[in-house]
Image (cartoon, helix red, strand yellow):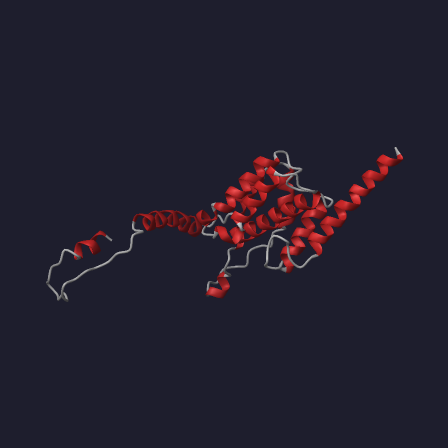
Length: 219
């Protein structure tokens, strides 16, 4: 019994030490960009709520939930965001490595915290946007500050991460209209992807006709 207690105590100490290293550093080992103060504060609070334990790997359906998050980051352009901002490819590669190898606790913790940090960034960008409306001259009221760490922790506990994402999406009518327009114009951009070239034998004057003009009419 004494040996078992010693082993458990060692495991607990190892957990705390690993998360302390990851959360107290100025940046995450997966990313070159340092934490912002707000990001680091949210990340610390999120894991404090979980007693500095693995968050995603202790969820009800770890693999399913992680795959859903990676797909969410990959589809960020549907929300007017940029998927590369959420290091989609790197996270997908690390997730594949974890599934195919025998990772240690540090590797699990590094991936777990990277996923949390990325999701916190995604939720922040989705709800508040990447550009301040006030900086662009729009006189919009400041949005209420949301405790993203607590919201995310609560969603994981009841397996409602997807619902949290929906809740964070702005409900303003102009946003929904822009989102619909984005789908339309992305589709048009794919249709007209080949560059448009005009080859005129001589200059055109008002009233002149050229078969090249028909190309412009198609646009």
